[in-house]
Length: 288
Image 1 (cartoon, rainbow, N blue to C red):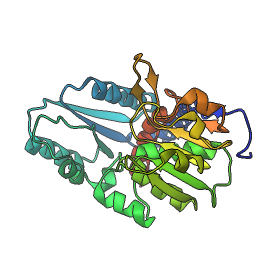
Image 2: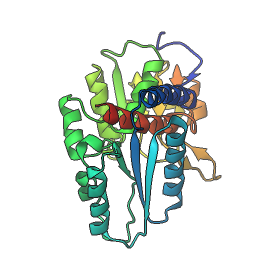
Image 3: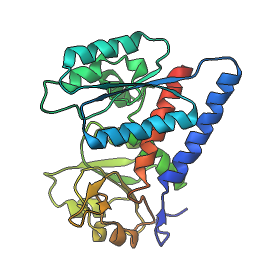
């Protein structure tokens, strides 16, 4: 496959995630048939944020589909950090739990320190890959749980069948959840990586030089279609509502698809891959 192929082909995260989940289901069933207990993923939801409830519900449904036991805890937003840390320690100590996920963001009107909460999770059970030990291991190229969204992006990129070595990737966004870790994963695959952000001068010019564009800034259609280099691969992490209330990504999809060789849709691109990678991380921890 050549980067100059047109028109843009869709990188279907929904279809790929289904294949991954079906493969995981077979592996879990094989463990069950061998008389082994099921993998366990503990999910913790603090407060009443509607979006967080939807995300956790989708993760729990995926667990059920695959055969991973879900141990779910919902806490009132005012329960406090001490109680949350106590629960995490109990889950760390439980032999039935192989992965732990604390749904972010934590309530902002209460005294929660997300860094301390994430650091309290046993690094071996860090299903989200957010523990500082695991993020440090990622920087050093050591084996550790990888953040789910960046891991899913790499799986989608592999679907293109391209030789990535030496290509230029531009990552728009520098968060600890997506921007920084995906940059490290791309570096591991021998790409040259430019990280852009809100203070980047002439963002359009930076994006226009990229063979691979990862948009993860959380601003609806910030990356314009005419910025895309003809034949580039575009991976859109954004999930936003535009002025008409329509769900859109960080990339101006319709115009970008006229120039790109491959592009992820929103929805149905990167989003489903995040859940698939969460369950994959849990199974890998179980199998370790």
